[in-house]
Structures are given as structure tokens and as C-alpha cells.
Image (tube, one colour):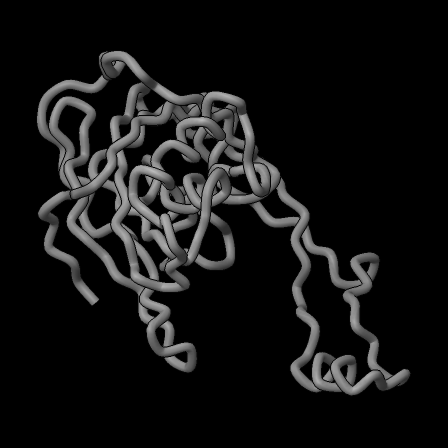
Length: 220
């Protein structure tokens, strides 16, 4: 049995990057299931539970704007990381942003507002005495009501923070009506093989602003 919650998520800007457009970032029309899961995990994550996103309610029509973002064009090398682990003084261990910074255009969403319906299942990992679904459910509700989180949730990228509140009443009505098909969209990443991380996609179909994820067909 899953223990369901609904959260209201909103923010001024969001960037859920389409993986096929890597140089100039371009956002999907709404939040991806993996980004929704990330927001929930920022509030409450334990190895004993696994979050499942059931439905996403897109309350506002997608509205895009273009901004310039500062990005770095390099990363710390594997050899430097190994040297740091060996306490070598020759390892650089950082990126000099004054030399590696680049300005890139990004097409982002603005004034976003979603309701995320989710539940969780027990994984059986690191189980302790008294470790029950009810226990985790009550902790989750308390953290949401008190505005607590492990780290600040964000809308695709960290510079776009998410405002998250527990929704205990009915879902607000969406501005979107009718049926829409947004084509293939990123669902999540399969990390079962750390040497070969595989993206998982699904066909994003919306009905009156709601994307039902309970029985979607996933494509690898």
C-alpha cells in the first residue's frame, strides 16, 4: 500500500533541460517526473523508501522566456580527484571560473505552478525495528507542514528555487483544457549500472492539465 501526498510547487523560473539540446539549454514545457522526485527527496529521503510520482498537475500554461546564464566549460579531472584522495599537493581540486566561465543562452519557463501527487514504497534496505510506512508518512507530513527540508528544492537547476507547500485540500483547477501530446519526455535515469547510466523516456500526454504517470509505457 502506498501512502499518498500532494504538494504545491511553484517558482518564478524553471529549466527542465531537454537532453537532445545540450549547448543552448531549452526547457520542456513542464516539470519532468525525475525533477518532481528530486523535490520530494530534498524534503525527505531515506534508503528505506522509494518515491513514486503518480500525477503531475500543470496549473499554468507554459510560458517561455530567454535568459543568459553563466556556465563553466570544464570539470575537475578524474586524475585530480584521485590525487586529492591520496592527499597529493599537486592536485588542483577546483575550477578557476575566471578562466572557464561561458555565457550561454537558455530558454526557460517562468511563473510555474504544479501539483505533484506521489506516494512511496518500502525498499527493505537498512530496516530497523519499528520501521513502518506509517512512521515515514508521519515524518513526511510533519516536515512539509513545518517547511523543513534536507536541502532547498529547485526547479531543474539550483538557481531556480522551488516553493513547496503541503496540499491538504482539493487540487486547484488548471488553466489548460483538452488533450495535449508533448511527445517523448525524460522520465528518469536508470542508475542500476553505475558504469552505464541509461535515460528512460515516456510519451507525455496531458488531459485537462493532468499527466497521469501510474501506467505509462517507459522507453529506454
